[in-house]
Length: 585
View 1 (tube, one colour):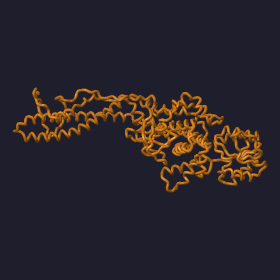
View 2 (cartoon, one colour):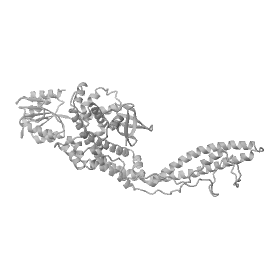
View 3 (cartoon, one colour):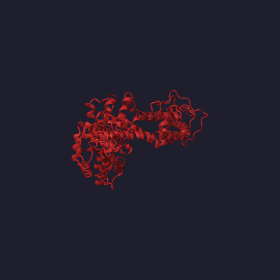
View 4 (tube, helix red, strand yellow):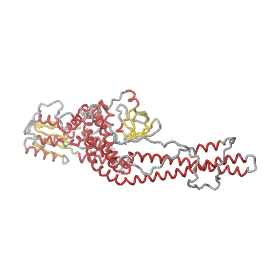
């Protein structure tokens, strides 16, 4: 069941905010956890959310939560989720096959928390309540008391003794504490080092194996660099047009978030071995945690007793002064009785403090020795295992980010609302992350940018360096290909041109690279332009603009010729046509 809260703070530029819960607790959240596409986050908005690791997740507005039945994750079948990847495109088909094989298992696997399933979480065990410490044996260690505290010999109680004053009654309640449990002399392992580490990495391994097919995807987008802008883009585009977030894109987004959290936990533990030691090894040691919890309770009691000891000692001084002043008065015996009761309570408190302090030091030493015995060996084993899985996690994340980003923009290109928004905003270029990021960065001064903005400039440089856009030339004659390529390069030295006369080699290369413009002749070496384009569109994810030299063939509805040239057009005319197509808004 979701929890209720209200948005206390939200920064649209940074994509982060703070929720305040019904119990006045503050939780951080990030825009990638916003699951409501009807209402966007805003200050004071009432929301419902889940809580994981001290952060708010799966957040939706109150109005959406109350008006709509939330669909379960299981209702999204893998076939629907990867519907866009159903064409016989190698990279897409890999993911489709992955879904078919994991239909029953995938949703269960990807909602796994980072905590391993087979790590036993032991319930808290309370110290057994026993008799209060009201008396001490004669052979107990002697505790030094202040000089003004009088220790009276035991006396038989007078059956008709007067009632103790209210102060003495209150003091007696202070010393009615639980008897200290029997001390442990050593701590027994619940899980060995190798088992505790294996429990954690088995879960990492399970996430990797479930998504192993992503490694076969040809494209990559470094998620660790691009993650912030990816989620900003996702939320901005969904705000422009809600229909962009289809079930398949929602599934890709959810799976990417899960793997992102898995990596973050993995990376935090890898960078902070002491954190890993506490959460992976110590957290599953039942006896260690029992003693640690007991030591914490003892510390709390000691703090309370120290406060009470000071209060009683102050009262004793006052009572002693009254007793000295009234030695010959009729009230002397009553005052003496009150003083004795208060003094007895004080002695009990001091003795209890000494006992608890000794126990606390003993338990701390026990815990320290246990930690030191296993710490260095754990660091070594954990570091070795970390090296095994880091590369696979990053590779899968980058492949997931590539597919998610490509599918998101492919859906955006079909949206009239997004196209209209780009036109109103004067955003020039193909609808993709690089174009959208450039539009945003054009409004910033790189020399005055803060750390977050500098990361975006670094992301743009990364996109330029790793995602070159090519002009691909296809012709039946090698001489024609070379002339077309030379003319295009002379028209603009910044163009990246790749030429082919072999159709299969061309498509294989295009799968791994981004083709911005495709230049081809009507008749190729082994087939015609119409057949080649059909195969190209079924196998290459990114769809280029097309310059065709010759007569227009019969094409399916989803194929568009951007520029049609006459047969035997000169290389110069071809180059000018390429430039005009690239310059089109």
